[in-house]
Image (cartoon, rainbow, N blue to C red; front, side, top):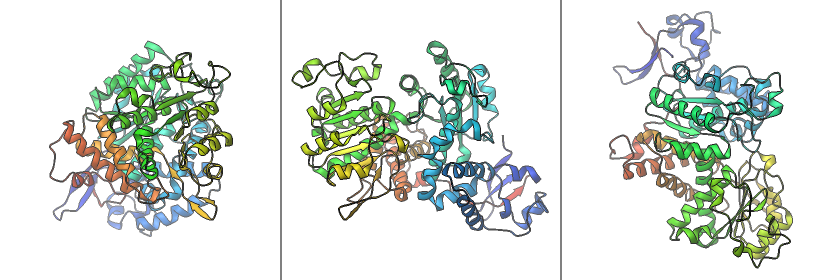
Length: 566
């Protein structure tokens, strides 16, 4: 662990104290200031002659870093460069991102992070975070002791089974926790020295990876069943023993394991599954905004969800809770949903349903009067034709699934259809905003999972809302850490949705833009913390002003003065 401590001098100035000197100081991302080390610091820490003579400001360095960023033509190479910069100078990286967030976010996060995952084994240069292989299952505490940062408060962990829309990526999925933590810091100011990405290497069923001579992970089929459950249990026990106060973010687990892990451990450790809960929070916020825009209460919506995997089920469950909160009993609320998976409409005759899907199966009597060729397979097109949905949500990762016929049919029966192609990465989107606006004559209310450019239609410019989890999880995490919550409750998640759903005043946007995401994260953090205090799950006494408390936990990328430890 790093030999550093943060102190306050007699004038109230914060400074960093360390015994690390020379080349080592320039090699540690959390400590390196590069050409910004002052003359005094260069003398004190043995850096004379190790740096060019000019002492630069952080902004000087950012200007150079931005030029370097643009020296790469391909986005994936820019992603690699930015990860190198993060591993070289943490403060410089985050100041660069902060200064150019709209431009850089798609490079470090969605959609380019998907390319980083698939090319992980070929582009690997420097490890970041911790890798826990199944073969090391009895040494997890020892591995945790090898972490660089001592005071870890936030972990993002993945086992790589269900990455975005690209499935099992094995150890390459480590790029996702790293990227998620970048976003936590970029939008919510969570101190990166309090974070840790972890990859649980449980093997892979991706045959291409197993046969790849450069694959870096455990070359073994995925463990399942009791073996897998014991592995997760050992991991949870170890982090509870080593890091008793922690917010655990589950990321990109397979559909079955994602639900099992969340349900099994959310009462034992303050935890959150972004694919289930984060996706649901943001989609619900967008629907709240869209319902308000169309003057149709959320309780009167008819909702078709295409893709009933982890994300689709998370969206469905979260919207269900919103309907119940707005006055519907559970049975009536459930009757507002029709779920369609790869085998068509989910009914009581459907096969191989997950536990999460079973409660959403439609009865045969519900579709008795539908004109369909076979009750065994009812297509999305037939569902839309019969249900006449007001809301159509895509979480299928099937590009083009929202065809012209489907969208025109929906638009012919609803004045302002609410259409959310949420699948990532961009090439997996069920439809493009340009097509949707064209097919609905500009009447659709749209939110997408990936970023899309503004669309020009009929002489107007339509900005496209991105229903991406970066609008939710950073603020949720900041709120949890600020109040030291012992649990993330459904009411806290609802507070996030409500706050986000009312945040934008732009009549053409359902959700905040990237430029507003930092302010939205603060608002969500305050709402989440206030709810935690109200529910009695906060680990500290409620202060007079919760917003002040939250702001005290926001880290700013700036250099501190250094003093050498005696």
